[in-house]
Image 1 (cartoon, rainbow, N blue to C red):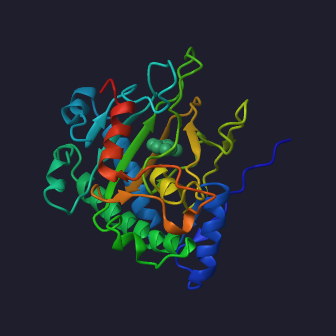
Image 2 (cartoon, rainbow, N blue to C red; image 1 turned 180 degrees about the horizontal axis):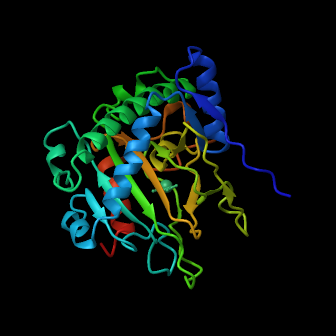
Length: 310
Ligand SMILES: O=C(O)CCC(=O)C(=O)O
Ligand SMILES: [Fe+2]
């Protein structure tokens, strides 16, 4: 029998930062995924976010499509996105809602919000969650800097985590209708684009990772829900900074007969930040594998490739 995947657990509140940084490094080199506990976001708030998310997705379609995604904020219907750009499937079987930076003008005005008439506590709930998760993400990034033997303010200093491009994405995967095409996923195989993703789940199965994407056939392992923990994963821009020392691991969401909700928070570098190999991650025998990129340009291109039909 296959062994259950045991991802490392990282305690964000530990006072032993050196040892926390060490375990983050091991987790990022080995899996690109770990659980984050004691992150400072209360269980009650997380539950409220799930409740509000469910209320939004159960609104009539004409209410949801009033908020159709513009400037990467708002509602995306079923099949709007295909994360695995190599597949012939008609798209991923999920609907979602994106919320972009909340505080910073002029960015914040681009957000779309459901009508207060239907969902009076929706906006304050999402705003509060956004602010709390971004603060956890920034604390985690300072530990990730330590894990890379950098100054803990490194990602702030290079302009990555000061006003990051951070998106909250509410996700809803409907239960699987019986005769679904076998290549259809809730989220087809992909890696995330940015620095780190902090994912809240509720315990319905679905998320899987593939640790060796080039091994055929690919082996997919379930990532289990852990009460009170965020599932954190490294994104492609962090992988580029570290010259693949930290792994941006392939993952997907399979469909089961049970419907599933999740809440992802993508913490990506400020759009003007240039992402290029860290000095400590390259040498003569291991030159940079990727050219420098401007974060905003890189993200635009990734969204363009996966949202062709939206
Ligand atoms: O819903 C999940 O569990 C994961 C979603 C995901 O990987 C993504 O939206 O990038
Ligand atoms: Fe993802």
